[in-house]
Figure 1 (spheres, rainbow, N blue to C red):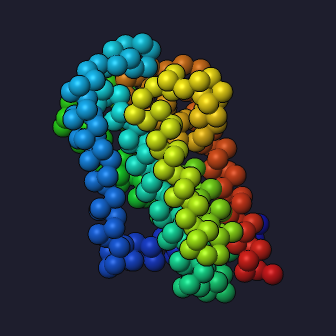
Figure 2: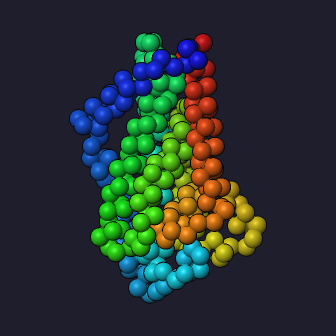
Figure 3: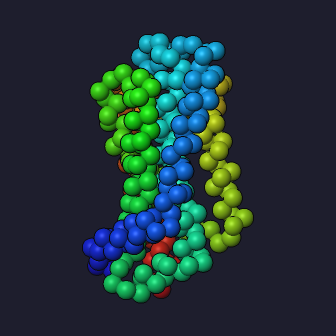
Amino acid sequence: MAGLWSGNVRAVLERGFKVIRTQNWMILVSGFFEPVFYLLAMGIGMGALVGEVEGPGGQPIPYAAYIAPALLATSAMNGAIYDSTWNVFFKLRFAKLYQAMLQTSLGPLDVALGEILMALFRGFIYALGFLGVLAVMGLVTSWWALAMVPVAVLIAFGFAALGMGVTSFMTTFQQMDVINFVMLPMFLFSATLYPITVYPEPIQWFVMATPLWHGVELMRQLSVGHFTGMTGVHVLYFVGMTALGLWLTTVRLRALFLR
């Protein structure tokens, strides 16, 4: 463990916040508006035609309130994926930043945790801002909705940890395009804009294996305060995803730079 972790994650975080303050703040801010525009276009625009739909527990809710928690989960995923894939790819393959870091007392677990926590910060900011938008629009109907912020961080943690590990295998920009190829269909088909029951049963099982579906369902349950046995399954899914991602990222950084 001493060769993997020096206990100085703070140094990685300090560098990350300095970069945001001086260079990347516009990128951070711009990512907040994507789910808001989706909510206005789909939830308010198309929602006027759809009316009410069946929410968790079978209770009818406005269409905007149905897709809003899903968009929050998607926002947490997108923020974490950006920081843990394209951002990491540039530092890993072009800036050679991690190689320089690991020549100091920092270990691969310090670097992995620092970069993943920066991605969590992005997910936290998006979740907090988007929840404020939902409250202003009157789409928050339960005090349990406050738990959507830490859950968004958990979702971001899972995607960031696994995303950084996967990115460590990428060597070209063409390979990085595979990430976008996976993310967009997962957003469209993970029951974000309509119930999963519209699919045939074999496709439903495939969708339920994807991480975003678990995040969407967990957020929807929190938005109205309705919980089932699947609530714990959704949480454990992301806990396991996070553990797998941390292990993969640490092993990959050690294999790449500490031979």
